[in-house]
Length: 408
Image (cartoon, rainbow, N blue to C red; front, top):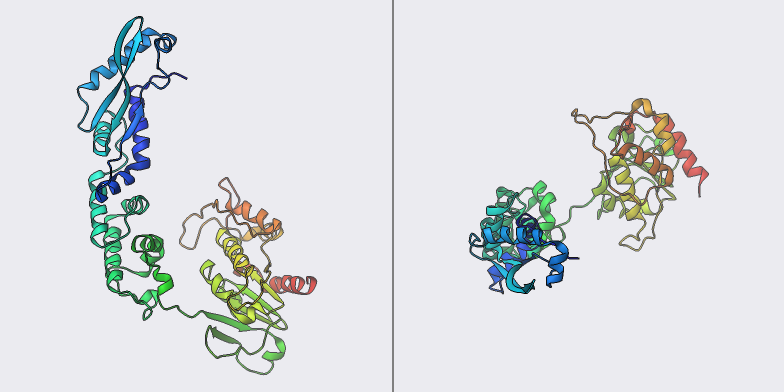
């Protein structure tokens, strides 16, 4: 198909191409490689006078005049590559392609484009030089990611890379103890993957691991009749043993639900800690050996995401070779969503409106997925959360007994 690209169309296409490859162009320049050239066809498919005739001589003449008007105003680093055509027996050169290096292309967009250039080239080059100065990994991907950071975050990143270069052994510190100037744990949580890519070091894997501490409540009536402690904590790697090996482990997110859960035989209630804690709980040996592992969380996007993650990690063998373990849920089906709808809310504890979620959770059951889709939808919905602590604990006991005694 024959088309004629106007200066406005060339700007739009050039902008798209620069947006895709500006980081490669900057990295190539810093590394001393061959200059990256951006090329935009201006009359694709127009290779003969017949093609011009099909387009129309008037259209062709207007297009040619528009490019002639700006040909003498092209910035340095931009040029028009001509093509020779014979039209009605007259041979002439016509603009076939616009080619530009990065600086020229950005200048062309600034001069003739309707939108600003997609990148601050000067800043990108400064960032590339700064990354090289601390021996960071400089690739188009890392440069693009760093370019998206705020100035303060760039400073922290560069200091962190430089500090890691001087400290090859991190085993004496936990993540929270790392004495990297200006860096705090929340920053590492948000930028840890980028720090790994830029430094070539995974500080999460290199730092001293923090043992998992599981807070639990004993609810077996026979044990409680002995007068011994009701609440306990279990730490991975310690020699401490729990009071009894449970047949059922119930994981809840709310502390009040754990502390005041009614008595149930052969059961321990564990306080979860969100998605991050799922992997830690999966390594607890007495949880793996329990006959039933049950999860009860809030009916909201976080609750279902935690359940999905918990199922995923327990579906894999533990590091000590313990086999996979299925996880049932209670009070998180679509029937529960409707039964306790009077407790539904649309705002969090700070008064902020709860948001929908597009996250795909492949490990939910059909009944759980129906509930999740209802509260996570981007469309209108009556409410987005039912907190587990508003559900009567005797209802939870009834459902727990049904799950653990009615299923194998």
